[in-house]
Image 1 (cartoon, one colour):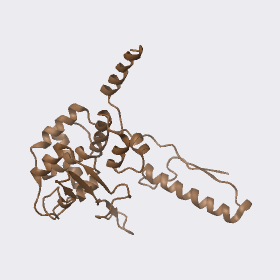
Image 2 (cartoon, rainbow, N blue to C red):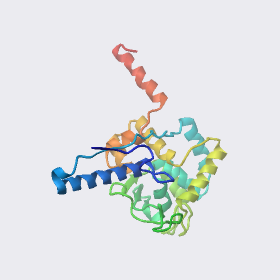
Image 3 (spheres, helix red, strand yellow):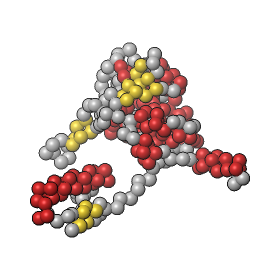
Image 4 (cartoon, rainbow, N blue to C red):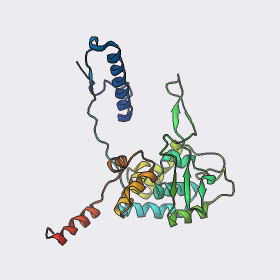
Length: 256
């Protein structure tokens, strides 16, 4: 017996994300496997066939766009500083929002990612959500990120004496991810960069690292991924300039 879950059959009226749909299918497979072990041959074999999901279009800033954004953000306030820090480290938006000055060690030139700030739906309340500050979503997400000279320079410029102060506000009141997304959209509009979401900063960081020959295992750990495969499959996108450079290397073996 085959259970074919067509597009929309694992979705609510508002729709589920591809990740949530995949998690739901994983739970179904586990349930069917357990029932079959209990009932033996009385339970027919059921194969769960997931719906095909369209691959999301990944946005990566070009070098020109990246330079334009850095120029715009450099003479800046605390919030724009946080945006630049995300571009220079690959941190997720919730991690940037939860980052406090006590998490940044200037002597060691290291950022300690120890918290994140998701917005969660309240149990039993369909439209109500709340901001929570807690440990990163996985063991790999809790990590130490070495800083580049530019990142260190910016941290020195915006450093606050109060360790509990959040980097985005400079005080003990935080800025939630939704507010940061609104501000970022305004920055992008003022820069004339079109439609770019905050997560594009993470994609751009990973791609630039690969372009300069970054060792992939180290990059995977800096991004907080569970494996190198996740880094390569989801976040690393070679630019046309790098592809042309690699093609030109074929001249050395008579193929150029």
